[in-house]
Figure: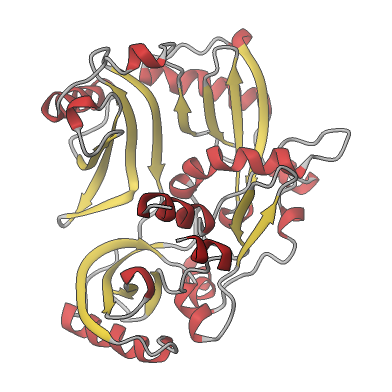
Length: 375
């Protein structure tokens, strides 16, 4: 097995935080395989788009000091009577989708709708109406607010036709900026990321992915962003998602040097494996609070679980709530000489309170023995 294949298998094995979805109640029990199969599509939408309103500091405290575990995850996938009493009706969701899609020059014909389902994400306390059309288009609407979250429009082209739709980076940037103006978004959204489907040879790329984000004091906020996929030449936006989460916009009251020292002290506690430190990297960023550091510090499991389906496919999900507030923080990465795969641990140090409010890659990757032996 070459390195590319090995890395691909690793990513498949350790995929975290899949927001497993749920469908509207049926007379017969929902097939869990069907539920999980839909997760791969739904997680792309929910991972960034889940907008939640918070009340005061109590939630903030609970998220990183008392992370809430979802004890019966599979049961929590079900949309129950209480959920139904809190969300808008199917007709309201459709009407809202019709109106909001006009902004993107899309005319949704109600008679063309083939299926409407409810999908629930326990990790983010989110419920979404997913609408599918006879043309294989998909529209995602927040079931609580009726706000459009995302859409995917089938381009109707064959692979051979799409592969001919190449363009260069400058043309794509111009197209994307024109689309943002056409959709009525203000200049406060700036390009924060651009990539394509063939990263090592952009001249052959036929799909480009552009993210426009709001900026706060020079820092991009991905939780307030517009993400689109464009096919060049035909100048067609085939998918778009809208992220608009509340941002605390908390002030900077500690220095980067202080944040680095705080992260180092925390790492002395977290680094039970005694990895040898080789360096530190840091930056000011806008992040979502998460429980990862708390779990590791208190010798708790990271919450990741895997289900193997009847066809042998495996899906991973996390049993902890992930809907933490969005805060300004220093991202301090501790580099090690001997940690597997050269992955650093990154700590989020709140720029106002100086507390560690989460992190990235805090737990080591868990790889099956047979996978490790196949390398």
